[in-house]
Structure formats: structure tokens, C-alpha cells
Amino acid sequence: DWKLMKPEIFATIMDFFASGLPILTDAQPSSDTQINEDDDETVQMIKELLDTRIRPTVQEDGGDIVFMGFEDGIVKLKMQGSCTSCPSSVVTLKNGVQNMLQFYVPEVIAVEQVGGEPEVEMKIMTRAQKNLHNNKEET
Image 1: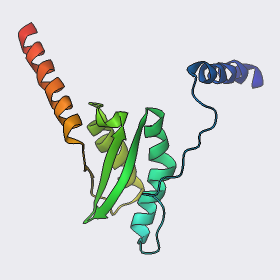
Image 2: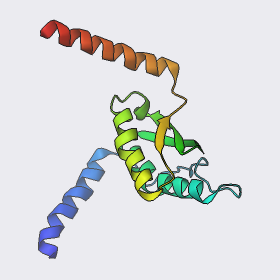
Image 3: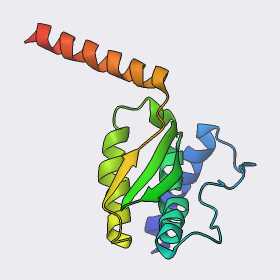
Image 4: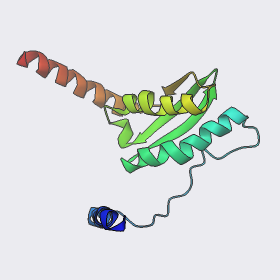
């Protein structure tokens, strides 16, 4: 019924305008998921899922995910943007991305993060160590 849906739709639209995000962007399609002639059917399905279902969700949080390859049942992905410093990126990769790819593409055994930036990884490790140290002192 329209009377029930209208307030929710209106609130969603107003929230978007209040966020200050651009309505349209000049973003170019990612070349990593472009289907190539030499891609087999499995790689084509992986790229299609990354482009249509996974990447848009990750980009909503300010990150991106780049297809780096598929070998021996393992999908190799690189996390970018806010995903590189997010402590839950591993959970996102394993629980979200891996589960979805395995559901739609039975050939996928696992998903692996590759090509992390060393300085970002060091910051994450340092932050985790500080949190562990602080938690020990509190208990």
C-alpha cells in the first residue's frame, strides 16, 4: 500500500540528499572484472558476481575489491580504500564474499586477500596489539 511505503521512501531519499554524496559520478567501470576472450566460464561468473553483487556493497562503505586472479579453486582479491584499514575486512572477505562466490560458483574453494599495502597492514597490526594490551590491563 502506497500510504505505508511513502514515508519510508521519502525518508530514504532525504537521508541520501542530507549525506552530501554526489547523485551521479564519473566513475569508470573497473577493468579487473572486464570479461576477456581467454577467461573461462568460471572466471567469467566470478567477475560477473564481483561486478554486480559484491563490489557495489563494498563501495557503499568507501572501499573497493579488485579481482587479481583465480587459480586452483582460490579467488585472489585485493581490498582497497577504507577496506584496507578496516579490521572487519577479513570477516567481510571470508563470510560475505567467499560464501556468495561458493554458493553461485561451485568451483570456488576459498577466497584469499593478496597485495595488501605493508604500511597499512603494519598500522592494523599495531592497533590490534594496543587493543590486546589495553584489554589485558583492564582485566
